[in-house]
Length: 314
Image (cartoon, rainbow, N blue to C red; front, side, top):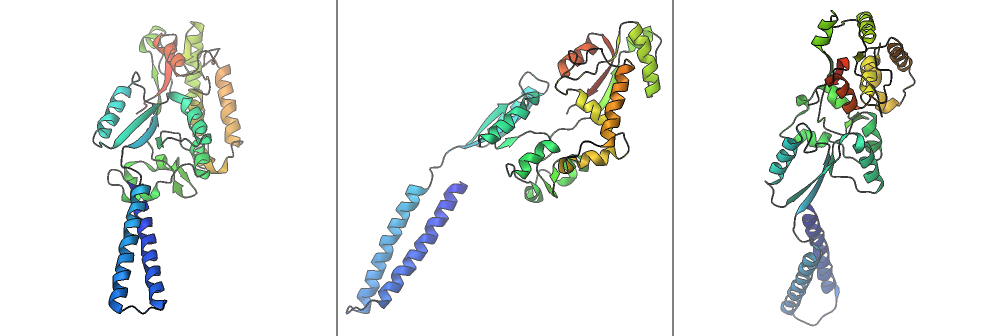
């Protein structure tokens, strides 16, 4: 509809200039005709130009039809909440007869491949779910995504206050916001009470207690913590949790998408702490084969690990 209105506006502007030009020429040309004849001729010329302009508008105005909206997200029908999410989108789209909603479902980290690939082909989806921080920075600085500040000022169904500042900060670059936070989660531990009771253990509350519990569990061929890391999952979140507990860690991570400085003292200290945790037997010996979400979850669900590091994705 916007294209139609723009074309019509352009055509009318040209039409006005054309009419004005014709009028000026007739006033300056020598003639022996009466004023009445001149007026009649001018009126006929104006009608002719108007008909021509109407033909131009009719030819150049795109025909009205469905508007296609591509939305790339990671909610597959078989995933938790996936069917509900897709159903909600379909119900919303059904309210607009001229809207064709195309859902491009890309599960997990495959979105990291899809979006750069689509961007290089000048084929980005109209809307897509993506990560904040450094992940969105390249797209924003390349002018491939729209900043949403102006939209937020007039939006009726969402306001700045609806989302914590920490969420907005992930999408803020050079004083502008380039995305609306969509999901949040917190990390936490759960533990297998039967295993802990069997070996007369209490859930650890300090690192020293974690080391002592791990010794008992390893002696009985039980992995203390299900944490692994394959392709960064879910180990990168463990790294982030530890990093942000370092002095100035939170402030450093907030500015990472602008400073791009990762070789900080806190980075080295966090990495060394994880190496120490490995030496203290907190993880499985092979953190690669037990890494990624499905494998690490299976360790705990199959009671091969006594504790589980996980998130309440919502």
